[in-house]
Image (cartoon, rainbow, N blue to C red; front, side, top):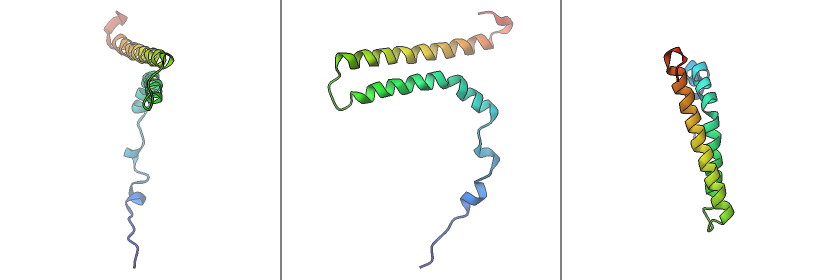
Length: 89
Protein backbone atom coordinates (compact mmCIF):
# COMPACT_ATOMS: atom_id res chain seq x y z
CA UNK A 1 0.00 0.00 0.00
CA UNK A 2 1.36 3.39 -0.98
CA UNK A 3 0.60 6.31 1.34
CA UNK A 4 -1.02 9.33 -0.24
CA UNK A 5 0.82 12.53 0.58
CA UNK A 6 -0.27 16.08 0.00
CA UNK A 7 1.95 18.99 -0.87
CA UNK A 8 -0.64 21.64 -0.01
CA UNK A 9 1.06 22.50 3.30
CA UNK A 10 4.42 22.84 1.59
CA UNK A 11 2.94 25.12 -1.05
CA UNK A 12 0.99 27.43 1.25
CA UNK A 13 3.15 27.28 4.37
CA UNK A 14 4.91 30.53 3.57
CA UNK A 15 2.18 32.39 1.73
CA UNK A 16 1.86 36.07 2.65
CA UNK A 17 -1.91 35.88 3.08
CA UNK A 18 -1.57 33.49 6.04
CA UNK A 19 0.01 36.09 8.34
CA UNK A 20 -2.09 38.85 9.92
CA UNK A 21 -1.46 42.35 8.67
CA UNK A 22 -0.33 45.17 10.93
CA UNK A 23 -3.85 46.62 10.81
CA UNK A 24 -5.34 43.30 11.91
CA UNK A 25 -2.86 43.01 14.77
CA UNK A 26 -3.68 46.57 15.86
CA UNK A 27 -7.40 45.76 15.80
CA UNK A 28 -6.81 42.68 17.95
CA UNK A 29 -4.77 44.76 20.39
CA UNK A 30 -7.55 47.36 20.64
CA UNK A 31 -10.15 44.63 21.26
CA UNK A 32 -8.04 42.69 23.78
CA UNK A 33 -9.81 44.12 26.89
CA UNK A 34 -13.16 42.98 25.45
CA UNK A 35 -11.75 39.55 24.60
CA UNK A 36 -10.32 39.08 28.09
CA UNK A 37 -13.55 40.25 29.74
CA UNK A 38 -15.53 37.79 27.62
CA UNK A 39 -13.15 34.98 28.63
CA UNK A 40 -13.69 35.85 32.30
CA UNK A 41 -17.46 35.79 31.77
CA UNK A 42 -17.28 32.41 30.05
CA UNK A 43 -15.11 31.04 32.86
CA UNK A 44 -17.68 32.17 35.41
CA UNK A 45 -20.50 30.60 33.42
CA UNK A 46 -18.66 27.33 32.78
CA UNK A 47 -18.17 26.78 36.50
CA UNK A 48 -21.94 26.62 36.94
CA UNK A 49 -22.74 24.25 34.07
CA UNK A 50 -22.79 21.07 36.12
CA UNK A 51 -24.19 22.37 39.40
CA UNK A 52 -26.66 24.81 40.84
CA UNK A 53 -25.04 28.25 41.06
CA UNK A 54 -24.28 29.47 44.55
CA UNK A 55 -24.66 33.07 45.63
CA UNK A 56 -20.92 33.52 45.08
CA UNK A 57 -21.22 32.12 41.54
CA UNK A 58 -24.09 34.48 40.78
CA UNK A 59 -22.09 37.46 42.01
CA UNK A 60 -19.06 36.37 39.99
CA UNK A 61 -21.14 36.07 36.81
CA UNK A 62 -22.79 39.43 37.46
CA UNK A 63 -19.41 41.15 37.97
CA UNK A 64 -17.96 39.47 34.88
CA UNK A 65 -20.98 40.52 32.81
CA UNK A 66 -20.60 44.14 33.98
CA UNK A 67 -16.87 44.09 33.16
CA UNK A 68 -17.61 42.69 29.69
CA UNK A 69 -20.22 45.36 29.02
CA UNK A 70 -17.93 48.11 30.34
CA UNK A 71 -15.12 46.89 28.10
CA UNK A 72 -17.43 46.97 25.07
CA UNK A 73 -18.64 50.48 25.94
CA UNK A 74 -15.05 51.69 26.35
CA UNK A 75 -14.11 50.20 22.97
CA UNK A 76 -17.10 51.84 21.28
CA UNK A 77 -16.36 55.19 22.93
CA UNK A 78 -12.74 55.05 21.78
CA UNK A 79 -13.87 54.19 18.25
CA UNK A 80 -16.47 56.97 18.22
CA UNK A 81 -13.99 59.49 19.61
CA UNK A 82 -11.41 58.57 17.00
CA UNK A 83 -13.88 58.96 14.14
CA UNK A 84 -15.18 62.42 15.08
CA UNK A 85 -13.49 65.28 13.27
CA UNK A 86 -11.88 68.01 15.33
CA UNK A 87 -11.73 65.92 18.48
CA UNK A 88 -15.29 66.79 19.48
CA UNK A 89 -17.04 64.26 21.66
